[in-house]
Image 1: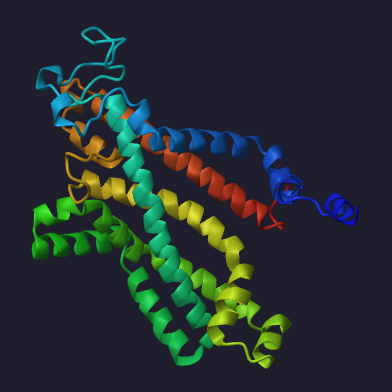
Image 2: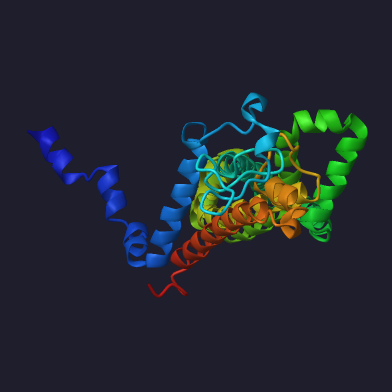
Length: 315
């Protein structure tokens, strides 16, 4: 009887989540709900691309050059088996978009994970220890911020290609792009986390942990970091969109994924030279998907920023 009474008194995690302010504000914001639904659609379509896609664009046996540059099925000359048409190699555009979205999202999330790891370690260290460590790390971040993300990415990509060759880069293109984009964007996290740490380390719970003799690493990661998660979550949402756009830009410039593993940016690049010859669908459809994906992620990021800042949230 006592255990049943305690279970009735203590709400489950799911009920606490349903009753939280986060879900309350989410249900009241139609833009956030629509953006999340659209993002979830993109994510699930990319995740289940091998099941949903009519063909496998990476399987050379399923590609026929005789099917190249076919228009969408509803236009004259189109075929029913190619709903959005085909590219210059005869690959189904719908299939390449699904597989390309998968690669773009994978690179986006993994690159943000690299940024997050570097930014948390460096930002926590700079804010907590202060002094010369803070000055050195923040000056290093300032130097990197003086270069644009694309400039850093282009320089590192060119060095990798010159050092290891184009074939090596093509074999490990996804890993290379994750590292390149991750290394180029970590200062955004480091500076934000440092500012939060400077405010948190003056509070009583940190002083109490220091008096109790806890190690610096434990105080930083188990006590201070959980109280800095709100700005980290907001930045991460925006940075996923930035990472996807950076990958698309590098692929468009020919410094991203190889032709046989097209991302959304690579698809746009491939079709750009055919857009004025009439095969507009090769570029337009991947471009619409890329713009829509980045837009909904940015809208979710804006909503999260407003929710976590009650001073400006009026929902």
